[in-house]
Length: 163
Image 1 (tube, rainbow, N blue to C red):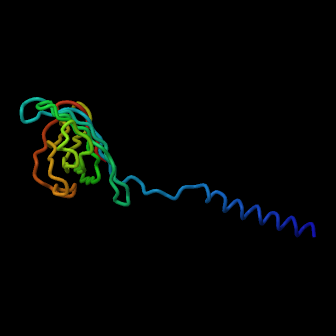
Image 2 (image 1 turned 180 degrees about the vertical axis):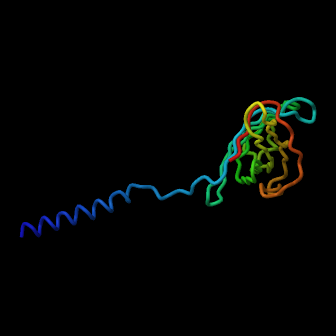
Image 3 (image 1 turned 90 degrees about the vertical axis):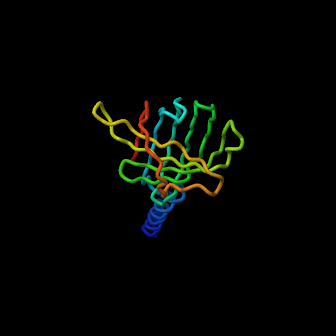
């Protein structure tokens, strides 16, 4: 009888040991499939600089998240964009999203599209590149999977990383 109780007790402990960890662990989340980060300056049409900073990632399920801050020193416009689309091909990343904050109210809610190129690191690497950001009316802008033909411009300072 004592052996039976001990065996039953051991069996119960084994079942609890298998079940309890699964109650407290979170479900597996998709891994990061692609990412792009960067900050720096490039020349705008007026000859002044545009300052940029962005970070974006796409998980293996295809969900993209991130944000971008852009400052146009030609006209003083600042924007913050929520990135919802990221496409990576080699060293080039294309991002799109929606402006969520700006010092120019009419820009809030507009679509944004831009592309960057990571040209490597070190003294012998070419400068990284970025297009100017294209803004479009809400729901009408291109997504990150579209190539709209904007020219990649050499950044003056900073660094871009595409993975």
